[in-house]
Image (cartoon, rainbow, N blue to C red; front, side, top):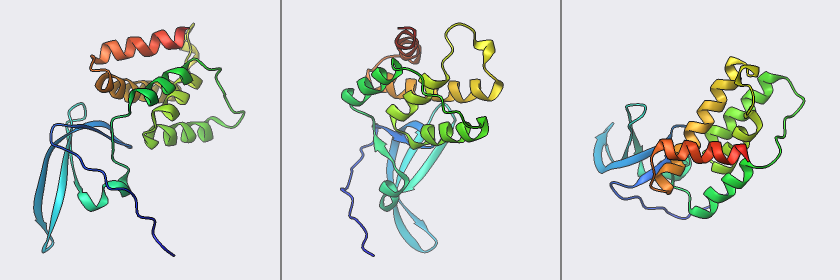
Length: 168
C-alpha cells in the first residue's frame, strides 16, 4: 500500500484558516515545542468565538484537513447552492441529522450551504424541531464566518447575505 503524497500547504502568522470540525480560526503562531522527548513544529490556531486554541503539528496539517479560506469562486458556488431546491431525503431524522453534521464538519462551504438550503424555513421557524434549528444555526454560523473573512465584512453582513440568498 502506498501513501499518496499531498501537496504541502504553508500557513503564515495572522492568516485565517478553516479547521473542518471547528470552523474559521486565525494562525497566531508557528512554534517549536518539546513534547515527549521530541521536538515538534506546531501551528497555533485561535478560535475567538469558542475561546479555544489548537496546536497542530505541521506534519499532521493535511491529515486533519486544515485549509486556507475558500476563494471567491467557491463562496459564489456555495451561495448559488443556497438558491437551489431543497433536497430532503425520506429517511429518519436521526440519519439525516447525522448526514447534516457530517457535511458541516467536512468544512466544505458547498456542503454546508446544502445543509442550510435543506433546513431553511422562510415562513415559520416554529415548524422546525429544536435539533433542526440547532443544526441550521450551526451551519449558518459556520458558512457566515467563512464568508465574512473571505469578503472582509462583518458577521452581520455575511448573515444578511445568506438570508437574502435564501429568500430569493
